[in-house]
Image (spheres, each protein chain N blue to C red):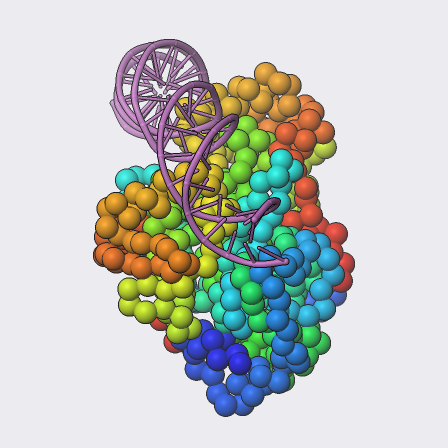
Amino acid sequence: MITAHLRKLRRRTHISADEEQAIRSAVTETRNVPAGRLLIRCGETLNHSMLLIEGWMAGVKDLQGGSRQGTELQLPGDFADLQGFTLKSLDRDVVALTNAKVGLVPHDRLREVTDRLPRLGWIYWSMTNIDAAITRELVISLAQRSAISRMAHLFCEISYRLEVVGGASKNGCDFPLTQRELSECLGLTVVHVNRTLQELRRRGLVELENRQLTIRDRAGLEALAEFDPSYLYLDQHRL
Amino acid sequence: MITAHLRKLRRRTHISADEEQAIRSAVTETRNVPAGRLLIRCGETLNHSMLLIEGWMAGVKDLQGGSRQGTELQLPGDFADLQGFTLKSLDRDVVALTNAKVGLVPHDRLREVTDRLPRLGWIYWSMTNIDAAITRELVISLAQRSAISRMAHLFCEISYRLEVVGGASKNGCDFPLTQRELSECLGLTVVHVNRTLQELRRRGLVELENRQLTIRDRAGLEALAEFDPSYLYLDQHRL
DNA sequence: CGAAGCATTGAAGTGCGTCAACAATCGTGG
DNA sequence: CCACGATTGTTGACGCACTTCAATGCTTCG
């Protein structure tokens, strides 16, 4: 049920059987949510966190003027709102991008777990710091990379992150976002996303059809994106 | 010495005398650093964190091609690299923007403190989450706001953050950045920063000279920026 | 006093946005 | 199972916010 989450953690550090059991016990309930559902509203008081088990979700901010910007993408195994564990509310909405299955983790339950096993608190603190590193990399993309390089970077990041949880093969992965959603992640217009996607295909780097991403030339894609995965802290076995 | 830091914490929650003493004791050494100094190199192994006492610093990423992007600004009272406490390295450099005074906090010392007073660990976890919220707001600025609105937003944010630590008056604050550094924070060219600054002045919103920011029309500035300070979690007394 | 960095201005170029139309696909109810 | 509206994807023409390049004056500080 939460195997993706455990894979994500174990990619960074050792998790004992005791710790695994504690994590499992913190999930009190799982829930299926349909694509498009608004799961958490910006500012609302939270007393549980949501662990994404299946599907994709995103943190988004809606602006006056109708535009929407994605600030982070959640893939299976990610917590959507670990920030809410300490701050008790989010500064963004969380929406389901696809049909999804989430595990509910009441804060008081999580608190018991991290009190009893402080190392787990430490690990989750680390995870929120990795989330922050991902957001910083998005800052770089938005400020410094061209549309095509930005999109290439997103594809690289997602394939790395999905690979960790077993959701990507060597040459691609599921990619259920519409071009509109992609544009919201990248800070571009739909029109320009469409053209940029065509250019990536024309260059023989990726193909994207039927909600399936195929990476035809990974080296070329990573070069275009200037992708350096170290910000994902994937090979960190010393937490 | 660390009064700015304590003001920052106390703006969000209660800090007992015992906790204050523990924080003070964690700072083993203070150090003066000159403007421009590279303090932490991306990826290097860290065994202490740096608390900014006086001056401004920034987290920056240098890109191939020579451009540099600021990912966060540290003001007095901020930790520059609390992320390093859990992850043991940063995904960005940290540089001093002005002459600065920093307090060194060895990680094992900080670890002792948070072990003995877990509530402090909780509070610092919250602080890293607030840092992440600030970075997310930067994402919004870069992706969705025009140059002038983006700059207005930065001025609003800084005046709020400085006000918390006693570094801002009602109509302005110190602002020691050059236009080049400002351009690196905003993801703009120096030329455009210059013109945008003139436009802000022409509209009677702010003035910036002699490293001094004067806010002539705060309501107008905040309206232009669509500034909403809730992402700073300033009125959170329930941590 | 000279050099190096910083601020300012103008002219010209471009990457991406905006607007508008249409085609393809999906989902739903009849 | 088909009909039909809604969503998604695609294309073209045009505009503009910001960049780029280049030059010049202004500080600052050894």
